Structure formats: C-alpha cells, structure tokens
Length: 498
Image 1 (tube, helix red, strand yellow):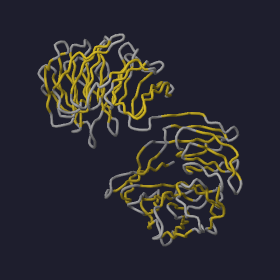
Image 2 (cartoon, one colour; image 1 turned 180 degrees about the vertical axis):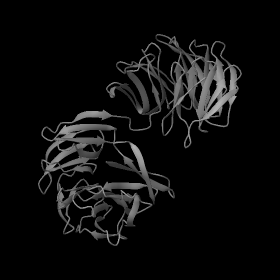
Image 3 (tube, helix red, strand yellow; image 1 turned 30 degrees about the vertical axis):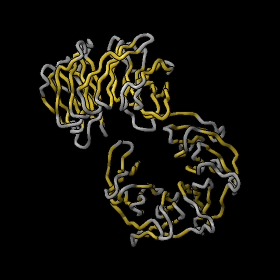
Image 4 (cartoon, rainbow, N blue to C red; image 1 turned 60 degrees about the horizontal axis):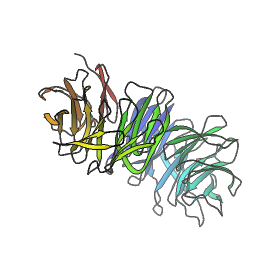
C-alpha cells in the first residue's frame, strides 16, 4: 500500500513527489521532475501508475511507473486556449485512462503503453465556461462529475466527452463546490466552500439532505464498504457521518496554522497546552482529544505557560498583551495591556506563581508582580537588541536565562535584577533550557548546533550537530536530565551521557 505526497517550493526549484510505504511508514522514493508545485496526484486502479499534475509554473502532467520509480511519459497539461489545470483523477477501472480539469478545460487522457505517450481528448461543454476544483469518477467509468467555483456540478460522459448535465440550475451552492463523493447507496455528496455537505439526486442535482460543518469542506472520502464517510475542512477538523442519518460527528481536530508553543503542566502528562494564531487549546493526551479552546480573534499567540499550581494559563500575544485564563473553563482572568511595544514573544512564570517574566520583540525583558487583583511592572531588563525567543528560570527562581534572535543569551540574577553572564554566538538563538543540575544551559538556533554552556562563566563546554537541514526551533529536557528532544522539520531525540 503506497501513499504519495507532493511538494510546494519556490519558483525555479524542483518540487518532489515522495512515495511512501504506508504500513511500514517508510520513504521509498523521491520523484523529481515538476517545478514549483505539485498540484495533484492520483493512483491508477491497480496501483501500477501514479499520475502527477504540475502547478501553474510547471504546467505538465506526468505518468510514473510505481514499481520502477521512474517516469513513463509526460505532456503539457493545458491547451493553448485554456487556463491552468487544477485537478487530476485516474479511472476507476482502467490503468491507462485519467482526467484533468481546471480553468475552462476538461480533458480525458489515454496512455499508449507501446509508444509511451499520452493523448488528450477535449470535452465539449457548449456555452459553459467553468473553473473546476474537484473531480469524481463513477465506478464503471461511464461518467465523471466536476465541482466548480460557480457553485454547480457538471456531469461528463466518458465515451462521448460531452457534458450531459449541469446543476443545480436555480439555487447554486454558495462559495463553490470544493469536494465530491459518490456513495455506494446512490446519489452524489457535495461539499462546499461555506461548509455545507449535501446529498444530491437526479440529473438536476436536487438537494435531499444537508448538514453544516465549520469551515470550507476540503475533502470527502468513504470508509471502505461501511455506511459512513468522512469530511475534512480547512479549519483543521475531521467529521464522520452515516449515509442514513446524515448527521456530523467530530472525530479529530487540530490547529489551522503553525503551532508556536507547547507546554505540559508541572507534574502532569495527561494534559498539555498549545498555542497558535487566534487560539489556545488544551488537549487530553490519553484520548488525543481537544478538551478546551480559548479563542482570541485576529491575533497570534507566540508563547504559553502554565503556572506551577496549575491554576493559570499565561500567554504572550503579538498585539503586545499578556493574557491569563482559567485552565478549566477558558475564562479570562486578567490582561496586561502594552506589555511590550513590538509584541510579546516569550513568557515564563516563577514557581511561587507571584511573578511573570516576559520578553518582547523590542528585546526587553520585563518582570511583573502578580497579585490577586493587580498586575504591576516590577523591573525592566535591557540587554538584548533583538526579539526575545525563550525564557527559562531555575528551580529556586533566583536565576533565569533568556535567548534572543540577536545572537545572545543572558543569564540574569533575579534577586538583584542584573546581568550575571552574556553568551555570544554566531547564530539566532531560538531556544534554551537548564540542565538538570542547573550548572549548565543548553542552547540551539539557526546554526543547527546544540551547545552546552557553563553557567558560572558563560564558557562553551561542547557542541553537537543537531540538524543537517534546518534550524532547531524548540528544545526540552527530561526532569532527570538523561534525555532531551529538539524540534525542527523532523523531531530528533538525543541522549546525554556523562
């Protein structure tokens, strides 16, 4: 069983197709011919061929031999009079046939295995000019359906290459048809850009049943031979529904943009907190479910921290505010306005829960006294010239360390609020943490190196190559100091031995 994934790169660079062995979860091959973007992928019915569609800057359709891991043939995907091709779908019965569609173009392709060439046939749509975003083939290859940005569905006969039906005629689907599914029970299930999932029947595609999900529908797929199907949305949600009841059930959820921080409460592994654009989420580890979502629209949370007593979630936001919430309900506790001029980029709390240490895009480190009803600025520490990326404190709260994108790490005396040591390196520091004994700190950043430093004099002890490809953006260490983990494009674990 294979899975294929396509890459998006910059203009002028090769965009790889990665072929995976799904049961073993191993990378089998990289197929590199497209440039800029791989727009679509589709396997032939028996898995002999893989058809790939390049993006706007590439404009080619390629047929690959899966067993040999090599290209069979290719051709420009577009006629000169048409726009871009957006989707590709292989036949349900024949390995040598597939369909491409896009901006005012619908093509049926035939693969000649003897000459190793593919030949397109244009489909006749009459006066209809549509932009196609999804396609679905019937089980017998007699017809295929196209979803358009105009909010209607086209039915095309595979043999005659002619559009035989178009609908709904009067009340089209709002924000376009973005996904299609042909269930075994009959009819056509349509997913739309406004989040509507509808069951349509007849040549005029009349809506018999409908339901609503959050966000635009991006995919529809059936569950084997069962009477259920799954719905994916651009809000990071996956729903499950039965054909008979046509009622959605949320089964999985995730952030829709980059996860900026993750933290476990002290002494608890069953819950953890993540933050991203617009929201903070609390997750239940054993069941891998979201338990709580705290939404703050139109702002990005850069960092999050749970106080030692587990009673407060403290967060840092790009609008310059520090926001605190109740972990059990998500209700706001307090806000510190104008905490930093260029946004709050890092945050930490002391073990007694009476102080918060924040770092900003302006390079300042600020210490706040937190009372029952008051939040007062205690001290401002000015040493960094770039954004503060990470803040850590030791166990007795008498010392702390901050990492910055200006290439410095500063070890602070949190009793006298003065600098104890400054570490300089030719990198942008992304993360820092104390070793178990707190006589060393470990740093990493854009130079892809993990470096151990002496707290007493700030001297480098040793360095380890942490990554071969990209910068290290996150790091944490176990409570006993035996192992640490780093985060980049690929997560790697390291073990420290004395």
